Length: 143
Ligand code: DQA
Image (cartoon, rainbow, N blue to C red; front, side):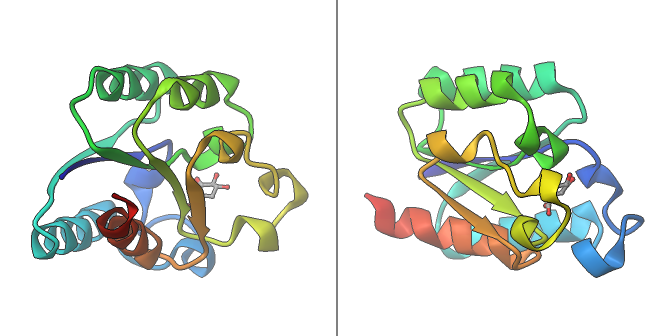
């Protein structure tokens, strides 16, 4: 099992962003949790972060070539308006799980819409770093 984890814009500045919403872990600390869990589950994992929509699309296009068994994506603010990311996810045949650190339904109205949710297999939102850990667990049971 090989999983691609994509972190979108501003997730590289975790630890400096609102601790109330995102906790105090840095991206490196979050990534260590992801790698440890992946090893425990005996998955291979690739982790990618970009602030740029085009780079995220490029990585999703790599997944289109069949290199991964599944994708976990926190598209950050792009979640709420990127039809381009939505369309790239829609083209994928492997399961894609949308994750968020904060509960996007408990915040501003503009965060309550996810344009990618309809083309993802499911969404895990509001559990901080454990949103990613739960998503990794899901793949164990999807096949
Ligand atoms: C986020 C929620 C988004 O609304 C926000 O723009 C982010 C992070 C989350 O993980 O809670 O950058 O995706």
